[in-house]
Structures are given as C-alpha cells and as structure tokens.
Amino acid sequence: MPDAYPVWKYYPPRARPPNWVFPVIAAFESVEQRINSRAVSSTSDTALAELRSALVALGFEVEAGKTKAGKLRRPVLFGELGHEELAYEVDAFHPDGIARG
Image (tube, rainbow, N blue to C red; front, side, top):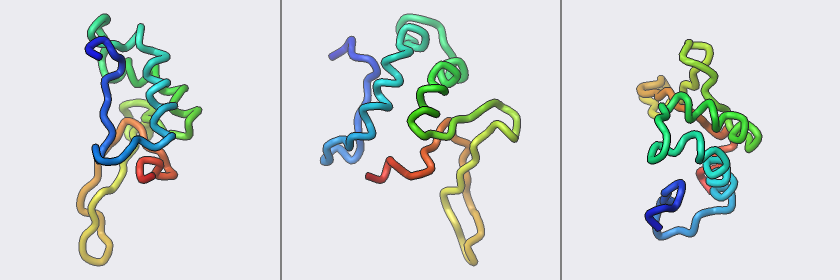
C-alpha cells in the first residue's frame, strides 16, 4: 500500500466509493510519472496542467490560468436574501455535482 499512487480516501468512510471516482483516479495514475511529488519536483500548477485534458474529458471544468478569467470561483455559503457570503477559487469542478452521488 505505501507505493500506491495516488493515495486517496473517499468520504464519508462508511460509504463505498461511487463509480465516478475510478476514472478520476485513473486520470491521476495516467500522469504519475510527471506529477508524483515522491519522484519528481512538481508544483500544483504543473500537476493541474498535466491533469487538465483528462479531467476535461471527464466533464470537469478546470482552472485555465491565474488570471481572473482563468480561475474557477464557486460560492459555497449564502446569507440573507440569497447574497453570497463565501466563495472559493477551486482547481476543478464538475458541474453535474458528481461528488454528491
């Protein structure tokens, strides 16, 4: 197990990972030689660039750069009258919310 790549865990741990997880893991496995930080020097930006095409093929939106136009901003908390109170800039996001099920 220590040599497994990538090391991952699905939450909640009481649930079996849904089928959408395995193609995402396969995307990481396919670029391991170029992004595995145990073996090569890689930044999160270079790793995301290597993963981008595989994630896009799976239906993800992926950050395209560090400019405002290239970033992915996702609101996560809303307050009174539906006003956004908190948002994050994320590396990738699946618009169908596959992480829900």
